[in-house]
Length: 308
Image (cartoon, rainbow, N blue to C red; front, side, top):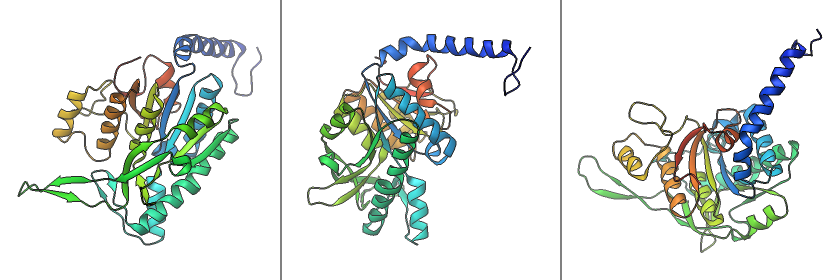
């Protein structure tokens, strides 16, 4: 019996085809459920740094567009920003999972995010057969930002003090018109999370936070945050398939949800409260994580909000 280039027999090939057909049949109800829906995806972490995963992600985004889903990509770039700051010998630190951003740092952040990284993602989607347009929150008045204020409690005195994070911002207003026009023209928006202040200042916005605000403004059916862990973990290190607001508050108070996971969970909760169907923190290291989450019954991370 003949074999293909991978050494598989005709029976093995037939079994593989049947498995593929079974998978497609199983996915069909979920594909129909997302027809015409907007899905905002925060792309970052290992998934963006690994060339193979980045190519798979681009193909998956193109597939979503081809089957009638409207994907909107908001990307991070922390490791790339860190590498550039190190090359330029600019010191950088994190507080509560957010990068302290002085004037020199925000210039580098904008250059890396809105320049190199944004266009790399646009190019990858193009190579996968899609049509993408890269923008930042400055374009079309998409993201108007204000300075982010955070407080921290001194563990000894228990006195709260205000943290100055520099040019770190939070969305004050989202104008989704430019995204809607791009999506209506059969284009995939790829957004760098840079905002502009009332006086023209440039603000570095956490990519998760930006994605959540954009998802809320668009009334997205899903917000997907790709990260470098399997999802939100409980006290024993096990992945939580679902997370309620009460459980999230308890885990945060206990220090189980900490560091960079804090803004992710807060973003998901706020997005659901603003009308997003549900938000999911999922493992971007898993091949085709977005497709697994949307089109299979098993999902690929921690879901926050009601399934709709």
